[in-house]
Image 1 (spheres, rainbow, N blue to C red):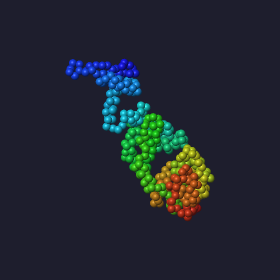
Image 2: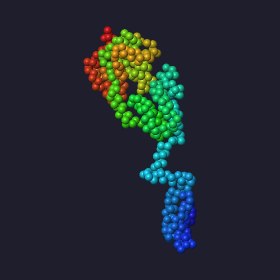
Image 3: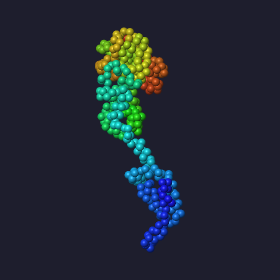
Image 4: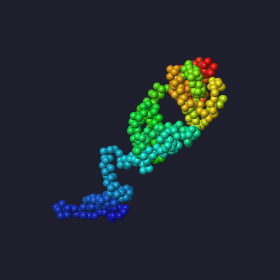
Length: 411
């Protein structure tokens, strides 16, 4: 049988052990050098057996051998070693290679620090803002969104990425994508409360989701783990946002009118409009009208502008309170500190997000209409409203008294 590119095997009759008593005639099958890197020899008693085996080997070569001829000696040796390593496993060489390709560093990958800056650039966060989040921008710049991302969101991104870069910045982003356990342990060691851990985890998750879309990483190591989900549920039960009692609100407003008149209107706007804390912080007097408060898109948390219809109680306050200049902010920069002094003097505990939650809870207790109150609060899903504002133990009488807290009632 001739040796050719399609059929690289030869058969010939030879005498084995020629000069010994065991001399015998056999048929030698030889070939396969281009496939295996060296000639393969096999011996048969008859030409028929040798020919049959040659045809089998030739068929295998035609199916697989033409690609193998392109492999170097080193590559063939590596393949043999790989098969030996897989000998005690249930996997195949192909499965092992596919797994490696999925998780191996990408050729286009970069270190985590470079990836972070590329990611932040898509959110409108510069290197200068990363180094000093939120400090260098002019007030006007803070009112502009970048592709829908608010200034506060961009500041939070920079703030949460800084410790991540300090810890992992020199690691290739593709390798870091495989370190889920290490990142999880770092988050738990670095941050104390489940909510803080989850906030930083979410930011890292966004980074890797972007990295995957850019073919810089193959997996996202910042997926929420079961233990954290359980802790978050427990924390939400323990830290359910509180509300102010009618008596506490009356005492606070009366004391503010006597001791710190400037923040009085901030308190009544928050308590009787349901405006979000971050929206109240950026609210200017030019946005406060006689019948409504306008929240522009750059100020709105969701980026969707809206109008807040004023309740009669809030209107009564606005009629007797002096307004500031149109371009001046309603909320003083040190509002939190000054409010704390008032609460300390009154020995009053201030619940988390007390003004907005008080508005929602007392508003629902007064109207009994979940859909209407959720709409006023701008909750897209009524489920969120039910979770935070229902079953607060507020009677109809208490709700009525809440909305009767007008300037004349504090005399």
